[in-house]
Image 1 (cartoon, rainbow, N blue to C red):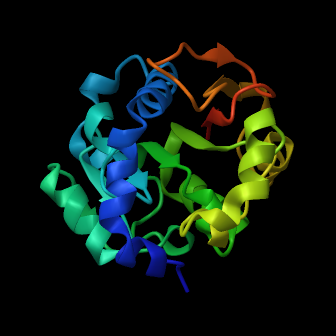
Image 2: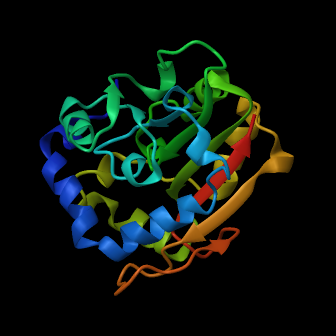
Length: 215
């Protein structure tokens, strides 16, 4: 069962977090943009999707017109931002194989029941040489360790499981992605930000890690 109850109950609070922490949010979007395909503008609507689109906070600024989301309340907010949303879960994507050129998943994996299955589903629906960009909170980063200790203070993170970057890369390799084409960026080195900060390559310092992999 998808863990949607907190998102149904606190969708407004979830959405407001991005405004209250605007610099963190913009830092995350900036890091994701650094990994986008150079021909992103040419990817037609049926070729890109965000899995776990939530309220559309990432799909909208990144130009991704389609999303999968199990929470009706979150999906309604995403639709209000112009995103077409299909109700579904990451572990059972309602698509035929090899139908997308680009799949995005941002912080969704820590709420999944079966991450390994979800990654295999992404691999299945991607076209050959398609790109998967995955972003998550790195449990082993300095801030990630703080989030882990304080997660029960949040109605969302108390049901989450945080992963280390090494664990994530192992799961991606198991799903079939080519380990020789992994690219990493990181950001959010401090949550008390006055303005958006630049991303860095690699991982280990920033709480927010994004990985681009290729089928």
